[in-house]
Length: 172
Image (cartoon, rainbow, N blue to C red):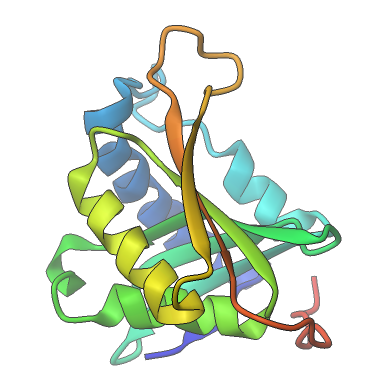
């Protein structure tokens, strides 16, 4: 299973995966859907259309099973902004391998955030950080911008080593 660079032709499956992702997160964030039953998707739109971002479809047996949105490609630190694997593909190492593969595409310093109440995400991201960076990772709490009512997010920062030339980007 490899992350595949996504573009506008992948919008429909990414939007469906996005709904599942935001639904899962709502258990930890308390965010409710919009009046039409969807969740805000501005980050997905930005990832598909803006420089400095790289969207990926995670596939297993030619089926979309997740997504990864990377931002900060034009910055010294990359951020795995959104990452999601459908429940049916969890627990088999697919997510960890996909996260490691995405990070390997852009060697250097990475950050990823998760909600403090999401204990599964905490275990997952600590395992990923250890796999890609050994002991070169830290964890800290940071306030959620614009959400003084929300518990601070936990941020993992890791160094996957060395800078490399960026991979070819999909045409937009």
